[in-house]
Image 1 (cartoon, rainbow, N blue to C red):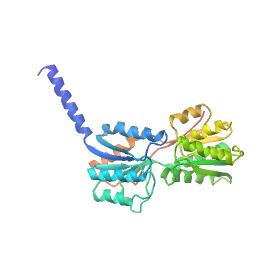
Image 2: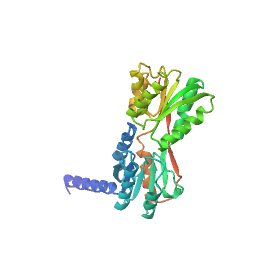
Image 3: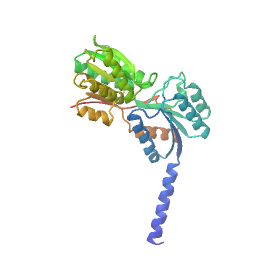
Image 4: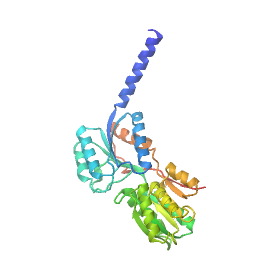
Length: 304
């Protein structure tokens, strides 16, 4: 065989092997939506990295609507996928569709967010960061920075979502240890820049231009970025007049920290395919009992 024929044969085998790898598993992924900067980065990472793990990923964007997620999951079940990944919009209302997946013998994996179901056997495991810890890290930084004396305005995430619930409870668990720390105003900004801007505008009006307010805690960076806009438009200096702490550590908040407009952010990794796909593919190759929660680490970053 000539060199060219040998090379062509080798290339053909390599391409066949690559195609076989790409077709090892078909997995459906029902994503919350595309709010903020973090969520699209997470979705892109999952889509870009799927082929490396032999996954044909069927992606469905729910646009923040649980009914769309339920429809997508049922479509995945009808297609007979090998596994289903869900990043749930809210924690409730999942029992029926998870029962349907279980009856079809399709394993379900939760990523990023949690669900509230009595029967934990309806899903294999949750692979995510610890949202409660993220809230605690933000609260601990603020307690240290303010010496435990701080009136706080809070921008919550989507009502009923796991990160909104858990980040709030973690944050409050820390500040409740300090009698002079309290949340004096709280409202949902739905994890969006526009929502954060509107909420901060309302806070500015209700508190006489944030008079006496020490800090703004946002459940994600995009709401904080909106808050920064609102404060600047009101003639305030975010990061100086008011301490600004949030969660995600997206590139735009890093820029805001460098500019002095934000003070700290707890990192929620968006490149998490390397944590998620190995767990799922290993399980599909050899089903086994897994811990109900596999934690992805988080870190706090502060402005220099």
